[in-house]
Each structure stands twice: as structure tokens, then as C-alpha cells.
Length: 133
Image (cartoon, rainbow, N blue to C red):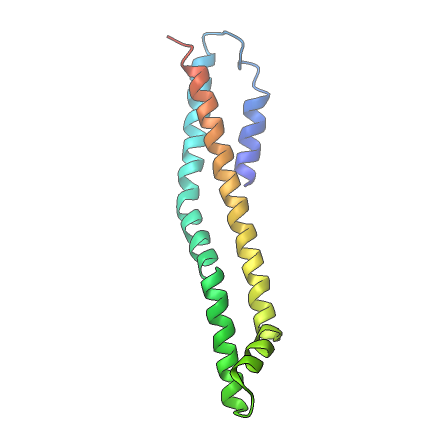
């Protein structure tokens, strides 16, 4: 998220940070508020991405393969269930599903890492703020 990168850079290179200047507390509060807003903006996105990722989990993969196998068996009743299951696993449709699965799992890992990073900055700023009276 570009907004986080910019805010993080601004925070890291802020001349008031660790200066002991009286304005430092206000600046830290500013960063804390901005990061908290970003964290909250990610909540619905995280929920959506996790939901899509769940639609591609192990159970969904098994069900997808079974649906493909069922369609294959209906189209060719001479094939055994074991054979159509093997063919389903090798099908282009299942391959596409697995590629989508990998993509959504990567998306979840990325957004989860982003939220964790933002949260850690919020915690660190909170610790800095605790030194002020």
C-alpha cells in the first residue's frame, strides 16, 4: 500500500523523532492517528481477501476436483470414479483453480503482513509516547 510506504518513510526520517523537542509528542500522535486510520481501512479488505482465500482452501480444492470428475464421468460413463478423479486433477480447469488458489493465498499473506507491520508501528509509537508526561 503506497500510503503506508509514504507514511513510514515520513515517520522514519522525521527530524522531530527522538529529538526531545516539545513538538515531538504532537508529531507522534499525528503518526499514530494516521497509522490507525490505515489499519482500519484494511479491515474490510482483509475480510474480503480472507473470504476469497477460504473459497480456495483444501476443502474447496477437493470439492472442485470432485465436481470436475463428476462432469467427466457423466460425459463418459465408461470411466471409473478413480480414473475420472485422476483426470480431473490433471485438467486445465483444476489447474486454473490451483493457480487462483496460489494467487489468493499470496494476497492474504501480503495483506496480513501489511496489517502486522502497521500494527507494529502503532505499538512502537505508543511506546515512544509513553515516555512523555
